[in-house]
Length: 81
Image: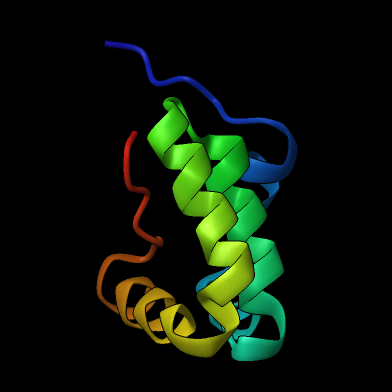
C-alpha cells in the first residue's frame, strides 16, 4: 500500500525536527500552530471543530497534551480523522 506524501502546512509541520515541534507546542505558539495543523489535517467536521476549539482554549491547557504526545509518539493527536 502506497503512503501519501503530505504537502502544504501539514507536510511542513510533519517535516520539522522533534525538538522544533516541541518548541512550537509551548503555550505561546501551540494554540495557533497546532490548532491550524488540526484544521488542515482534518478529514471530518469533528476534526475541524476540534481544531477550532484548540485555537480558542489550547493555549491554556491543551499545550501540555501536545508536548506529552510529541515526546511519546513523535506527533500530536488528531481527533476525528
